[in-house]
Length: 388
Image (cartoon, rainbow, N blue to C red; front, side):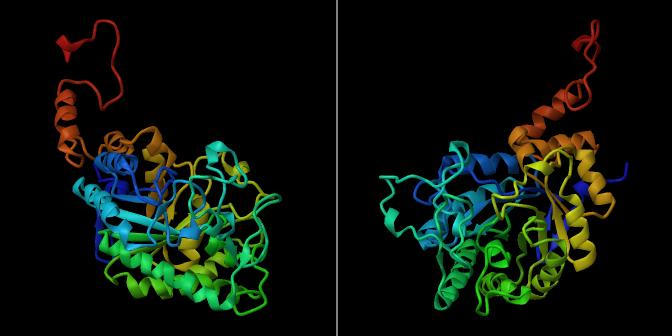
């Protein structure tokens, strides 16, 4: 059988992925004062042990004021390097590449955890710097009615924010991560600058599309200054946000990002404004894949497809049809941390479990040799171990 593309190795700059399965970054909201906890180690580690090629740690904030809510990870200070290194090293020891997403929430900051309900976060006594938790944005336009009105960044402040991304990237390198993804989607700060709705500035960072793209491009240039040229750089974008920033604009942006050193566009959607909820799209397998295909074709840049990619053969079809270069799987990994191992069995890519941790592979392959597990169930009356 021909090796499935999903389980073929893939090179980006000097990084070789053992397969094209990427665990997309997923907020856990479980950090303590910006520091990772045992939850983060277990959460990322189980995905790596389960056979993924690349595991991306959740959005980690480049500034303290960039935190969205309680429990965000931080990388705005050297003190965060050592505990994050522990996670990166564990991921790599399990045979996966270790990635981290860098982000800044901007005007969507100081909000409740999702499972505690949307909206502004009420005063939290335990947050010592509550009053200094400065909610900023390109303009003083709130995300939604009743949300905090952000303070518009002064022109002389923008350079420091841009530099914060670069310095966080340098810390990520020191922590041992193999790749970085910049979060430019879902209505967070970079996306806010791109948006004609959130960005109503009249200076060099607002107005025309070229001006609104300036912040994103400067962030990438800063990151590339601090981040080794040998290591890949991804960027997540909302290819369609139904608020004035869509596929045509992102094609233009992606071409420029490639020139600045971005290797892969992670193609997502939505999140810019509460006026247009994203949920109406969430009823079709691979609902964002066409955006990855369009950006790949029209911007001539590698893409990662995400969004309700649930089955291994579905992921393989996306690659075979040239719609994307990498497959990002999120919630389905929460449902099955061994999704990569499961897909490999169903696609016949790793019959001997050679590409997962031996603590899994030895016992599962031994069971398979007796005719159980791995393959579709053959259980029926009269068929048992004595016939296997």
